[in-house]
Image (cartoon, rainbow, N blue to C red; front, side):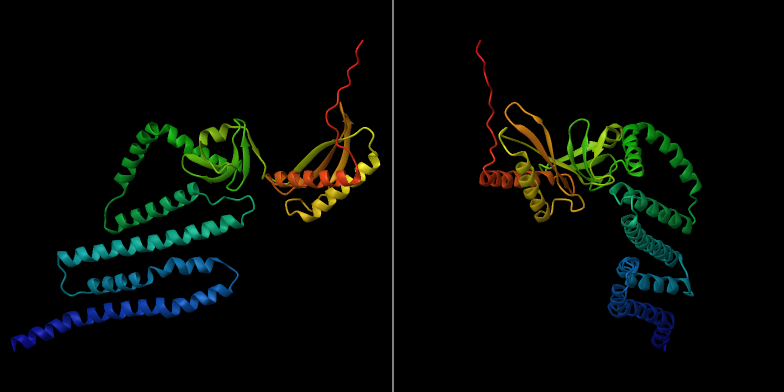
Length: 345
């Protein structure tokens, strides 16, 4: 009889909680396996990318949330409560809040990056901004956890304020770089992807702006790490701010006996042909021809192209020199060697 009573007592106390937890885990698994996959297919049909970010944020947490929430219900309604069950209840609550905070961080960061990409000249999605957003979300989650376990956060905030003053004095240079990085981004002086040259001579593509440094990739494939304070105070030529296209000039000279009308016609024909054939040339602007003056041994002229971005000038100049040299040779237009006439008195 005593064994039968213990068995009935065990079933009465634990059967219902075990069933609740098991059902919750099964529900979370089937939701993730079937309903979530169908929702993914539906979201792929929509034009808004935010629903994909929402589902990706929740995907890794569905089973865990089902399990933790069922445990929370079980231990909250358990008839016999001791210090162990209370401790377990607190741990479950902490894990649940931490999991929700993590999912919210992924969701907000994803939406932030999506929004920043669609802003013309808006906030760029760089490491410094994403880290600030991430730290802010996790700090708020930590404060909620402390408040849920009845830990007063007022003394901690006071201590953080006093400690923050001491830390700010000790890390003055680091904080200067942080705020200089924020100034660079908000003023749109440079943004990731821009090709820039500094007054100190460095040139390259801005790759990222971090807490302390700006990473710049040179055309030689070397990476420069520039302190944000130096970049903020430097004179910067940004080739990609506004219209990134720019003028490409090719200077040449022909013999003084050349037919200048023929020279202009032939040079423009080759320039227009190159303009239509090469992807690097800006199709909104046509090549132009200008005589520049009487040189020591030639009549000088220039052909003007327009490239799409910095770096396009190299293949344009390279190909045009090859084409115009071949065409001038065919048309018997001479490109003279340097000649100096010496008069002996």
